[in-house]
Amino acid sequence: MTEEFRKYVEQIRQKAQELHQSLVVERERSGSLTAEISRLEGLLNDHKQTIEELRGQAETLQQSLDEQREQASQQPVNGYSDDQAIDGLVKEIDFCIQQLKLANE
Image (cartoon, rainbow, N blue to C red; front, top):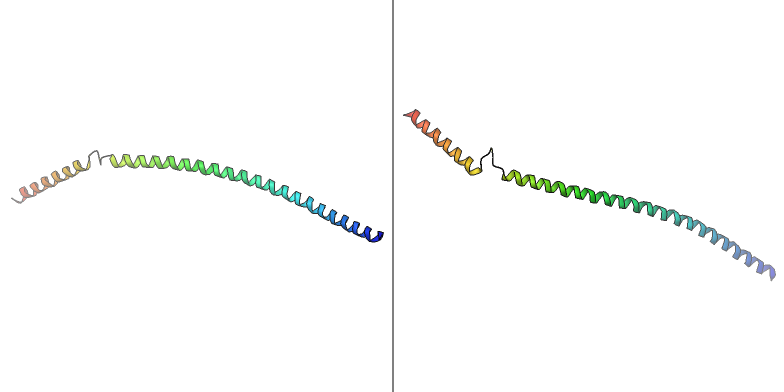
């Protein structure tokens, strides 16, 4: 019975060593994965910061574009408002009609 007992103890010892070796390997793997997670979190934070900076720039550019569009829509064409431009064209047409009438008489 002592021999059987020694075999069982030896088997248990081998299993314990195998489990210990597996534990060491898993701890190393866990450490590597933890380091990778930290690295990726750093990259993620960098990308988030870049995104926020780009959003800020986009917002600033959009505001500038809106202001320029507003200014362009308020500026009169060639220094005249639309009504003044139309009045000027009507007067030119009247003048041309008068000239044609005089030329045909």
